[in-house]
Image 1: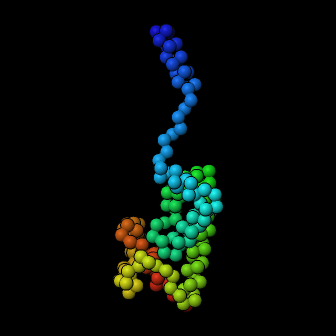
Image 2: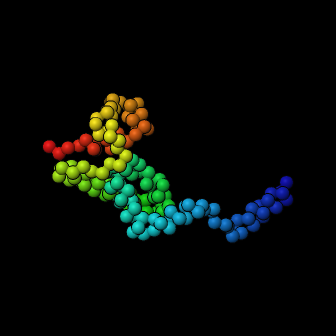
Length: 147
């Protein structure tokens, strides 16, 4: 039994000393990682946060899932850029509506503008249901008028 254990130990030590191959990386990941290098990646995150605050239907947190993971060492900085973009987007929307302009909302239908969209009833089940069928926030943003 001892001879088998020694031989197995030698094989394991030999395997650990061999050079390791890098993990397989997909072409999509490689392209995204290259695209998200440096300041360009920060700008993408800022613009995504701003667009989401104005009318983009994909929430800003998804940018971290889809794009932020290409550089995990920069997640906190990129999250700050998303938040800064979101705050800027809210401010831009406020300034536009205050000045009598309508913020861009390309996914809003004419029915939404006419008020056909029922507002969600209170409670988690309706909020979850509303979030799966359309962007209720966009229609609400279109209705916002400055006093």
